Length: 101
Image (tube, rainbow, N blue to C red; front, side, top):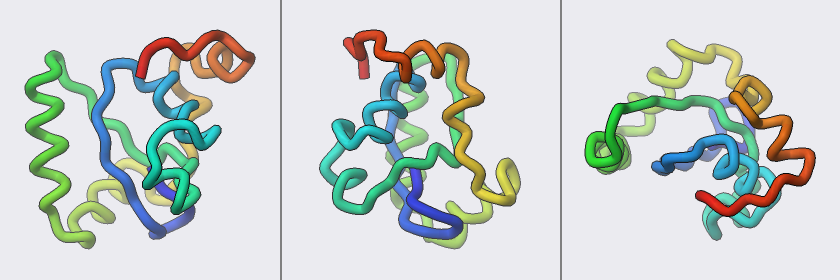
């Protein structure tokens, strides 16, 4: 999550990315995202199991900022908000309950 091009970034892990991204967008996700107005999903990495995802998140949180920016810009050079590209994102935004996150 980010607030703008090359702005503040947040790394997190979830098993349900569309509802979790929606929570961040509507400022009910995390205190950090709310404080820094992080509403753009600019990068997503998918794994087969949660243990791998958690290990990847912990490793990435230790990365230098320049490495994180490079990772984002290889996949999303303009830091576009990828939320609308998520499967099911439109239904979540329309008001479906966000029971998972």
